[in-house]
Length: 143
Image 1 (tube, rainbow, N blue to C red):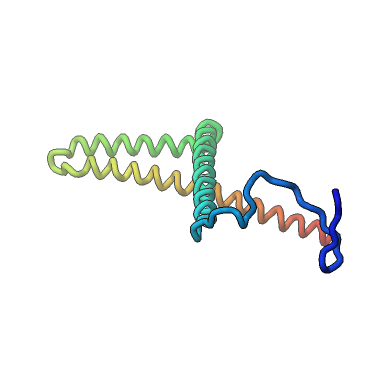
Image 2: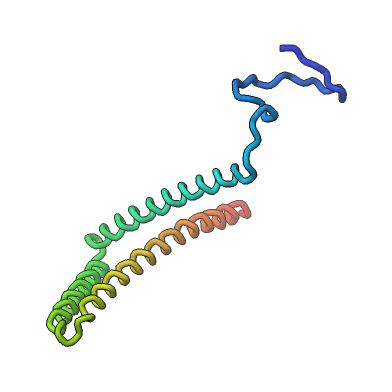
């Protein structure tokens, strides 16, 4: 490899050779194309992360249902109350035809809210873990 002196007197070496066209030889990209690629990648990563969180929270709650007596007891009580509400709504369907749909909507939205709150808490726990780790490392460095 031969070295060449530049006008400033600094030696330069030719860089690696690529089969790809040089930047100046490429067709100009539309403004924002790189930004679009980053946004698409970010969207894909966010979706994958959210899917991981959903699966992990579901797994944790299933384990809690068998390993945590208080949580298991609460889940059982919620199920029993829902069964009573559905039975009552069935009995009162003639007087209040919208009651059964209302009970079903309530059950759906409370389940959704419960899942969302578990996901929010899990994500915050991940952020807190990083923060606690940083604080702990700072504390150790000060000692």
